Amino acid sequence: MRAISYTSPGGPDVLELVERPVPEPGPGEVRVRVAFSGVNPTDWKSRSKTAPGPDGQVPNQDGSGTVDAVGQGVDPAMVGQRVWIWEAAWQRPWGTAAESTVVPARHVVLLGADPSFELGAALGIPFLTAHRCLTVAESLPDRLGPGALTGVTVLVQGGAGAVGNAAIQLARWSDATVIATVSSPRKARLAAAAGADHVVDYREQDVVAEVRKVAPRGVDAIVEVSAAVNAGVDAQVIGMHGAVAMYADDGGAEVTVPVRLQMGPNARWQFVLVYTEPDRAKVLGIEDVATAVADGAVRVGEEAGLPLHVYPLAQTAAAHQAVQDGAVGKVLVDVTA
Image (cartoon, rainbow, N blue to C red; front, side, top):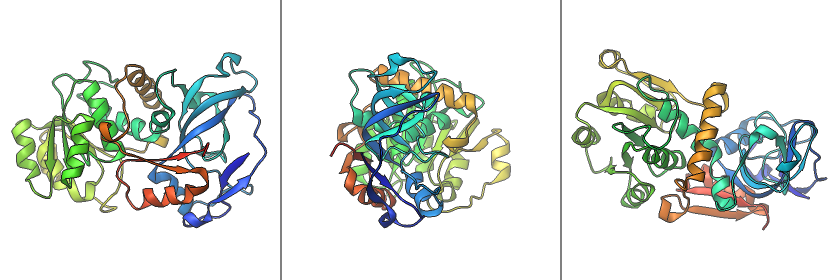
C-alpha cells in the first residue's frame, strides 16, 4: 500500500511516498481504509522537531475512512463502519497519511452514513480543542449540546481558523451568543458563515468597545489563539468567573496578564493541549462532537466558513507546507488520489 513516511525530523521535504505492507490490527485495534487525512499545525510541528522511531513515522493525527479489519477483543460488527479518527499518530508510528492505518479501537468514532469523509477528517484536533476551550470555565457546563450555553456569550479570537470555526459551530449548536474577531473582510464572511452572531475586524475596530456593546458585563469564555497579542483585550472583556482558554501561541510564546484586573472576576487563564487534557474531558468532547455531527450541526466548506484545500497523497508535503504557511480553512489529503 502507499504511505507517507519520514525517518528524520525536518521540513516538508523529509516526507516521502513509500510502499509498505498493509498493517494488521493487534489486540484492541482496528484497521481503517483511509479516505481523507486531516493536517493540523501540530502535525508539521511534530515532523519538524521530533525524531521518529527506527521504522519511520506516518504523519497526521486526524482522518476518516472505513474499518476493514479488527483485532482480538474488538466487536467484529465494526467492520464496514464509516468512522472518523482522532490522535492516530500520538506516540504511535501510524498516522493517517496512508491508504490504511491501525489505531486503538477507542480512537475511531462512528461517522454515520450521511456525513462526508471530508467532514470526518476535519473533526479530531480542531473540534476536540474547541470543546475543551468552551467547557473549562467554572461557570459553564462540561457538556455541549442544544441549550447548554443558553445565556452565555463566547468570544472567539481568530474566528476564521480551524479551531475558531469549530468553536463557533459548537457554541452556536449549544445556543451561545458568539462574537468572533478576524483580520480581514474575507475572514469576516467566513466567521459569519460559520454562525458567529457578531464579527469584529480587529484591524479596523476597537475590540473591547465592540465586545462590551454585546456583553456589557463581559464574556463567559474566550477561545484564544494568540494570548501574547490579545491578553490585554481579553483581560478587559472577560466576565465574572469566565475563562480564557489558550490553545496556541500564535504571535508570541509568552503572555503577560494584569493580575489585579483578573482577581475581581475570579477569571481563569487555562492552557489547552488536546493530547494531554484530562481523560474525562476527552471522552465528553468525543461524545459531544459525535452528537453534533449526528445532529447535522457541523459543516465544512466555504459555505460553513471552512474552505477545504485538498491535496493528493503524493503531495502531502505541499499540504504540510500550506498549513505551515497559514492556509485559511482546512487542509486535507485525499488518500485515494
